[in-house]
Image 1 (cartoon, one colour):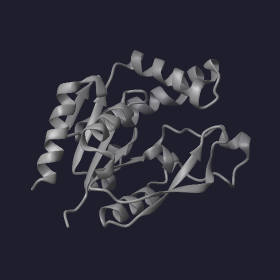
Image 2 (cartoon, rainbow, N blue to C red):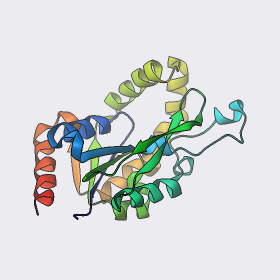
Image 3 (cartoon, rainbow, N blue to C red):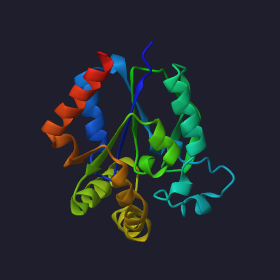
Image 4 (cartoon, one colour):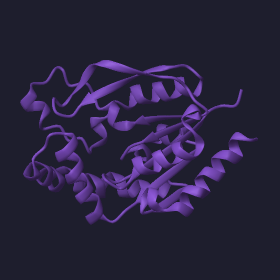
Length: 206
């Protein structure tokens, strides 16, 4: 049996990582693709008060439970199902429920800091960096956090300036050097998507 292909998709907040993932899913087909979001692997913070959890810097490598993520990726690569955590961004903590993810031929891992971790990098067969202008990214971040995460405009801007932007410059942007493919404008770059899908199909057909 062919080992699953692990594709790492990274880039700054709001860069279009999810759009790239969805485009690959659309071209390859759901029966052969599963998606793992690094955002699901923020550390459990049950030992902290809500006020303490509110202060978490979600853009720093230390916010992630990479040990669990790596264990789950290795399980999927060995065709073993996993129980993926669910993170509640309004309560700033991991939920008790999990989602069962079954292994597929293609595993897409998306997140802002996946290329920052050497062990995760080494597991990836294809490493993609989605490169989008910072003004576009911050607007997308504002819209997402207000609509999906119950945040106020002021809190999103404050967080962006205090932690998101500094972390991007310190951790995310430098990880671009590890990418095999850099995609300007994300999922709207049809040529890049076609090249990636062609590459995936060529591996699957070997």
